[in-house]
Image (cartoon, rainbow, N blue to C red; front, side, top):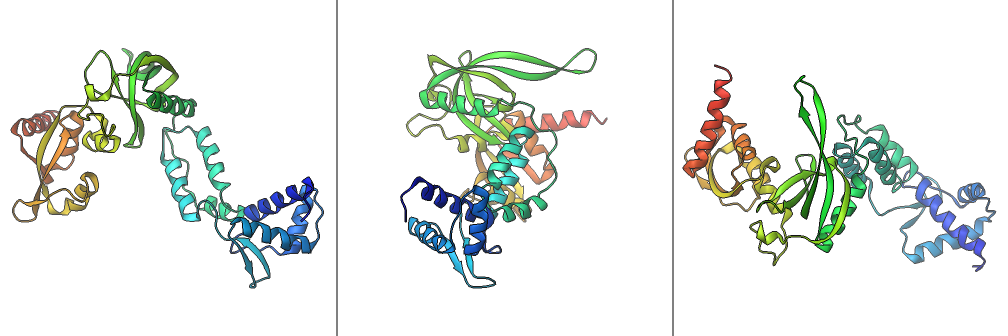
Length: 334
């Protein structure tokens, strides 16, 4: 093959043509590829395409030489398969902390991983646009800055936006500045949270990334998370474990709690707390589990949503918290 720059550009163009225009249902012959090369202002003979295909295959690309329904070539595999792209697309669309503008940019990048025909098929079956998307266009910068701060173990400064109720019964925005020690990013309850510490307190706090702006990495060293959490720092901060223990991302004191659950809740409990959690019988069609969780308003609300199908049996003070909350709900209807 010629080593002129033009021949190298042609090889790249052939790869791009196969990437965007071929798949198992859309086979390109050597003549088809030559015609598409004309769009790149590249003139090529059919025989040279065979050499290009051979070169790309030798490099490791999964290019299939087809005999039926027509003779030609197609790119059989890419970085992501169609089902994988569909899963990622749905995740991006469901994430309401991503703005509509950023969502559109991400979707196009994901579609670019497929052939044009594969992408078109997925677009035709995509669900409607998710409403209530964030309007914060700084999310990418925020994630990048926070990640770098966590890696460098530095504090961050940022503005935090929150809505409040006015005397006229309307909502108004309120922005406050914070200086925090960042530890981890957690996606929970369809929100993206930063787990951090405010040096005024010896605990962890949760802030939504879509409400953060103007993030600045400070020179000041972050406070070690072992000073404000149960994690000792030897194995790092376990964000997944932390999220499981804090319902709806409410903070609170960690306690060992025993729950009595209806038998039909087995799948749901194992999905949330893990399939290895020990189970114990609690009479007919009920089972007991023990969990280590934050006894916060989030946990109490989670128990109440099951009515009598989930009951706190130990410790008694946590059961009392649930009783008090249930009584307050009852009083609203009396």
